[in-house]
Image (cartoon, rainbow, N blue to C red; front, side, top):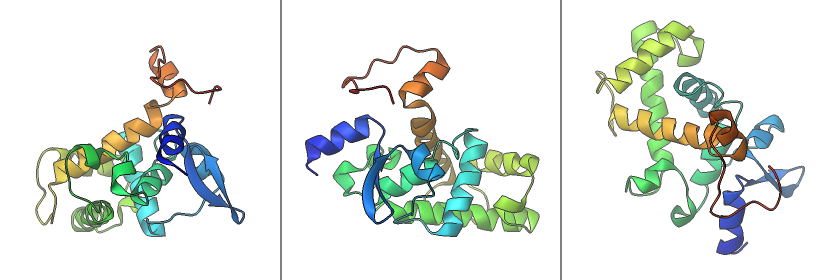
Length: 183
């Protein structure tokens, strides 16, 4: 696929994924619904990422945030549309997500002696608040607030960066490249 086709398809919110032995263009929501395979993220990272994204922006998991992030992690850095690229974080980007998710899990274990996916909604919100408020004790690597910001931005892209998302916000959708059909 050439760059022009890639940009046009991404503008439509489509990701290329392997389904049934072939390649197919799907929205992140469709990729999740069809249980499309992941290329970069591990199974435990997907579950953790979806649980975290749901706290940041309810509806992000169903919108396919994990498939969106995984797809862009597998792209060459110039074609990646994740927030990290625009923050001048040097590629590769996968270690940022793996490290952040690992730190999130370690923090949950330290605070609640449970995996993040096993704690209740109030505990999840409190844990996220500790990340937003600064660098939790023991957090390694990139700053915790940067991890929060990047993942929240990615979730917002998936949930509200579509024609349907604009409609939910009551904002007229005016793409700089109009899609050929409603998606």
